[in-house]
Amino acid sequence: MNLPALAPSPPWREFARRRDGMVYAMDGGLWLHRHTWFGHPMAHLVSVDRERLIAYGRSVGLPESRLQFKPLRDPRTGERRDAWHWDLGGPYLPP
Image (cartoon, rainbow, N blue to C red; front, top):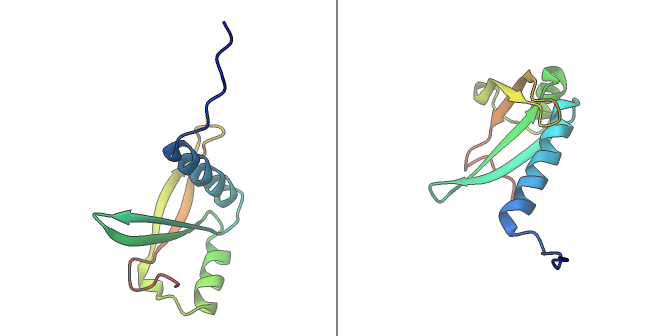
């Protein structure tokens, strides 16, 4: 039986975008992850490359007090890796 192809639902498209961004962060890139938390806009700038993340944050004036260490799970291998998150919260979101 041939079933017609279905367009992916928005949650799956969002998951794919988030996963691709996480893969980029796992490879040393900078990933800006925007989301809402109880209706409030939030964002995290994430990378496994701490020095690159700090250099970028300083260049745009982010407060280092909001830098946090959190492990990430690589979606390709399931391996946990050390990662750094800059918790941007509502007031630090770019327009």
